[in-house]
Structure formats: C-alpha cells, structure tokens
Image (cartoon, rainbow, N blue to C red; front, side, top):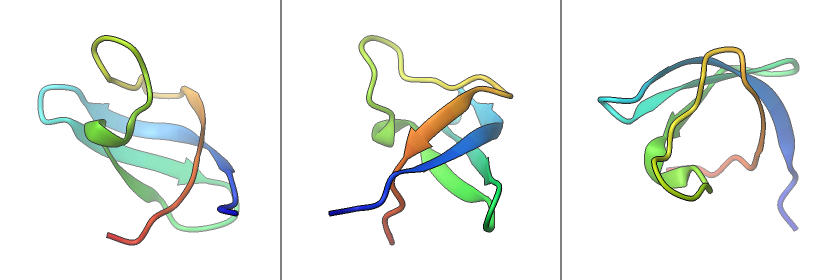
Length: 57
C-alpha cells in the first residue's frame, strides 16, 4: 500500500498546469494537473493543504 503524505501547495501555475507542494519532512514535490483528483477544472491554490502519494516519474 502506498503511503499518503500531507503538504502545503507552495505554488501552482494553472495556465501551465504544474507546481510544487511543500512537505514538512522532505523535499518539495512536483505536481502536474493530470495527477489532481477533482471534478471540473483541476487546479490548486497557494497555501492549500493537500494529501497525496509520491510516485517516481
């Protein structure tokens, strides 16, 4: 089972579709809009708390 991690959105550029999430216990993590599980327009807001899994890509 993959471990779920929490973090805070450092920044996200909705027009380019990517950004970074800041973790408390590790390096920042790249996020692409295609990985966002949401209905409608998939975007994140700076400062938003999120839960995610890390995949090597």
